[in-house]
Image (tube, helix red, strand yellow):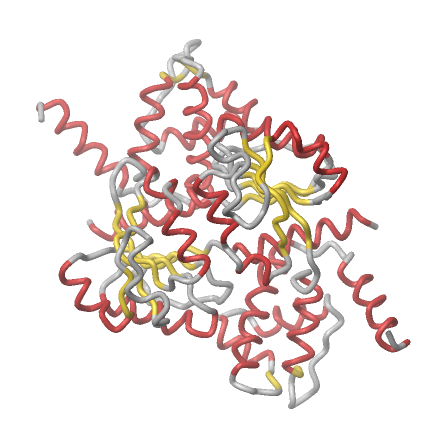
Length: 224
Length: 224
């Protein structure tokens, strides 16, 4: 590694340890998705006005969001697309690998393990856990599926920092507690149950069912 | 159908055509998940205080949310668990079937088609669309996968009101436009791209990548 590269990495690590506001974190992946489109079109520069038009986000908001990343556009030229893409992907953590366990390997858990798209974004599911004898020991998912009782042992051999929760609601809290007890630092909750975690544990809810409810409710009101 | 049942249904349809505030719609599935746990434990009544303690939602907020559904608890007894469960499931639309097309049958699209959990919540994926010759015509997913060019024709034979978007970002907008042109009334967007739709089209974003970014960013700040 050259000195320049190493200096660059240090800066990057310092930057990505900033705790960003959630709304900014929600918008950054939109910018990255747009930048990837520009890259495929071999466009080299983009202005915040262009990004603003494409994504319907206020241009000043975009400039503010990107300033968190120490990215500044040049007057009349805008942002260099490749640099913007790399910085966003690095900053969002998509270019590093983050290890995760799948807690619950039923229908949704299996689907998420099979979704290779997640690994493209830096999430590496390295093992699954379940209690169902039909799931435990399965060989066809590409990762080993263990009985949940073995999570402490597996954590020592092959640790993961993220527990993805895809269990039935009634065991969501207890499953999260077990995963955290074993050492995961973040819970990504796909169940509709509102899991509680101690301070210092990272928690993200992906409320698939809430989004379904939203769609159904809004569709219903269109129909009438 | 008895008169009582039919009267009940009418009320239900009137209720579910109310446009609820998004935060309420986000909380209702939490209540339902909790009620399902109570049902498994054969508990017959629950107070808003109990729900409040279990879910860390303010008890007065719970009473307010449930009043939208015309559910009122009884003093000192609380809500009847089974009635609460049925009303919530009906209201959220989970007990009716809503037909959907999967637009994009790559890794994520395939995973969502395979996730039988969605049908439990009233989402019935009846066909998939793609442009990849490796996907079009696949027989192993349980639903037919057509070339996207055939969406107009399929819409006439076997219509769906929801288009689930799981395509690469760079074709997200155009794919949504095609699905809406063919007649879907709602887009459920799983891509990180911010798709724009005309007024009157229902739009829900499930930002898997934004949640990943949030987890990675928060984990990073714990590490230091």
